[in-house]
Structures are given as structure tokens and as C-alpha cells.
Amino acid sequence: MSQANVERIVGRLVTDEDFRGAFHLDPERVVRGLLDRGCDLTRAEIETLVALDPLTLEQFANALDPRLQKASLRGAAGPFSSADKLL
Image (cartoon, rainbow, N blue to C red):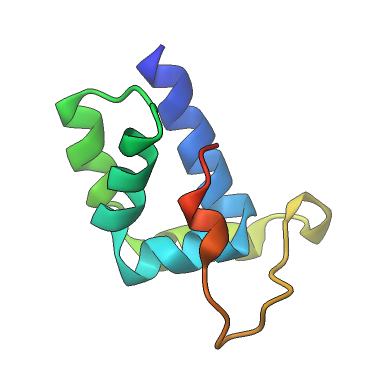
């Protein structure tokens, strides 16, 4: 089941602006938060997710149709609380 979780996390990273922003600031905290909430990931998946390049994720997100995006309503200075929620 962990492969499905990886797919959900990567999908959320490219479609959820707040989640992506929190990941950009501290990828380890975001992944650790998911694990704390019961997200099943292998050690290799954790290491690979934490190593994802935030700028590449941002570029991919910008290439997607905006209708697929969950835009932030918080603005640039707002907290990234949605990153604390499980998928």
C-alpha cells in the first residue's frame, strides 16, 4: 500500500500550494508528520520523498492546468497548516 501513498503525496505536492510550500520549507517535517498520522511508507520511500527537489515540484505544478490546483488562500506569509493534515 505504500506505493499508493507515494502517489498521493507526490500528487498533493504538485496540486496543493500550501502543502508544497511547507514541504519546501522543511521536507523532513512534512514527511514525518505524514508518518505520525499513519501514512505507510518504506524507509527508501521516505528518503526519496525528502530528497525531492522543491523547485522541480514547483515547475511541474506551474505546468498543470490551474483547474487541477488547490490554490492557497493564506498568501505568502500565511502558515502552512494544511501540511499537517494527512492525505
